[in-house]
Length: 207
Image 1 (cartoon, rainbow, N blue to C red):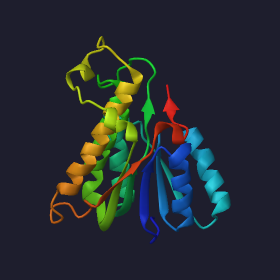
Image 2 (image 1 turned 120 degrees about the vertical axis):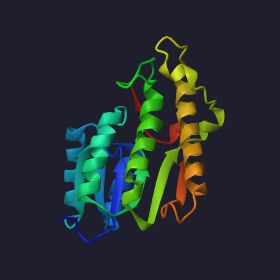
Image 3 (image 1 turned 45 degrees about the horizontal axis):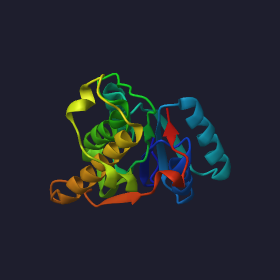
Image 4 (image 1 turned 90 degrees about the horizontal axis):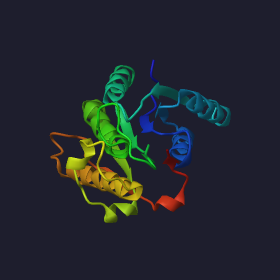
């Protein structure tokens, strides 16, 4: 059974900012729900956090943000076990160094950094506590972004890794502003925070 502690759901906790956030959330007394693609790496983080904070409640749910089916399965599992979420932190991100497509037929960087987190947020919004916050991690590189939607489903489209990453981060920022504009009566958790950092500030996932 979930503990009485506030629940924080966070993606991508196996390294970088996500790992630090998970540690600080556990330290602050949150029930931490880590959504990760690599379950083995996530378990190592969970064991480390449990040794640092023996009273912490830390859970792992598999989630591959590049797969919309995986996101749906993950959201269903989270909503059943944790019906009231205090923090939803969309942290996970990556940049593909070569042009690849997701299992759903979208450019992989955009699918992982934006489409997956967008779907996850929409599926969990009805399970957010009244005082909840949605936190979308972005990057200053979004200033260089230019939303070009047509090429996202074209496996033969011209591809530049930095441009793909910038476009996905711009979409994150636009999503955050869209959430913040929603009436509070319709969405009690619309107070969103953008956390921006240059790509060189931390180790990012490259593939």
